[in-house]
Length: 362
Ligand SMILES: *Cc1c(COP(=O)(O)O)cnc(C)c1O
Image (cartoon, helix red, strand yellow):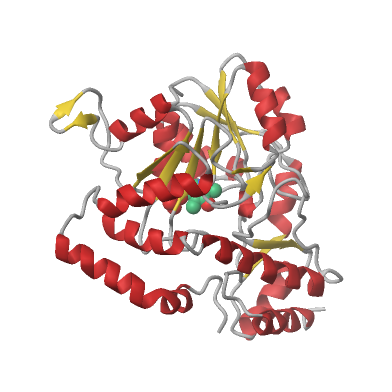
């Protein structure tokens, strides 16, 4: 059996360190905003090359809190990608703003910067690019548009921890970067977790208050905040994995490159745009034989998945407000995309097994 991601296999390689770290926390009982959370924030900020990293309870919360801290409010429009996980749009709706979807590029699946200006209205206050599947969106172009129109840029880095573009890490470019530590993400913990990165002192201060009941001093509450903190036990796991994240991401890249070499005559492999580093949160191909490939993979006990079968503008929850919206590249991609198992420990032998199985569909 080959899973989409082998969390158990990875755990076994770091078991002793993880077990000891968790036991230490059980022993010292500093469960909320303890020493590991503080240390992790410092180490993550250093790794990503940002001034501040403020952890929180999930990637969804990271997006929500970042939008709040950036002052995005009811009635605003936020330009984003329709080809992403629902959380991107949910967070925009949490602050009362409206997601405005701009079509993606057919090769990278990232928001197409050439189409953004057309979507800007006098209500637009932010652009929320998603670095989908681990390949950075074209940030240089996006930042230029944002600066021309005086818009804020909030990056969705849930799938791109450690991906670089133009010499910077994702999450270090816009006003804020929103990270998820959901277990299957490139940097994942053993439960839910998230973080916002920023170089802006005021935004960082706002985030620290927002995640902790609107309070910067215990039992003094200045605004309505939230209970959204990274768990100390999760911070223990994240510190251990952060030390290895470069290797983990390189492991994914190596597996991806072998896949692409072996699969290129059968499917359209993922395209690396050469601007940013693709860290392959997902290895996603395009194919007209998706059902047939999934069928043979299943017969061989190999997992596969469709990210994402329904673009956000076609979701039931947005059916009313998105009536008549046509985003042809996104819709075509949703029909033809297929994600194969990818994780740092995926061996050449496993890639060969998966490719051999896929070939039987042709
Ligand atoms: C996973 C993910 C999120 C949400 O992160 P959670 O930690 O699960 O809340 C947001 N955006 C994208 C693109 C994601 O993949």
